[in-house]
Length: 114
Image (cartoon, rainbow, N blue to C red; front, side, top):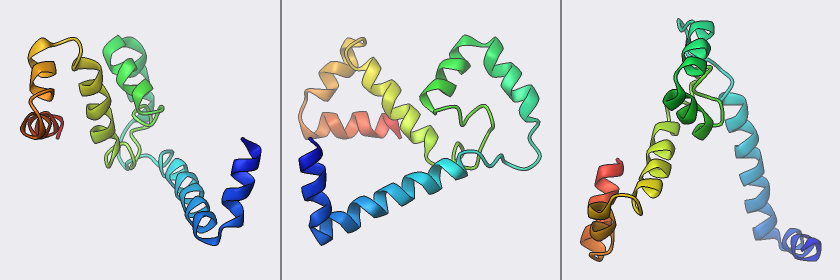
């Protein structure tokens, strides 16, 4: 495993992509802690602790919903919707059938996710 990582860093193209991905992850984690101006984060955190469903959504977002961060208002709703749809596909038979209908069914599931 370590040898594969070492080999990946020896290739300039792969090394550049790995470094870019790492830097973007670090930047995104910093952005996830910047709250939206004008939001009372203490009351929001209390709400997420009291409501179990909201607490689970906060868990999916990595805690960024509690601070109502800028990142939580950007890409996190889509990521959370995708995770929830993936969890619901095997549970709801109509969604599972729709996803197995080929390209048109997968496009419909993607449309519901959006």
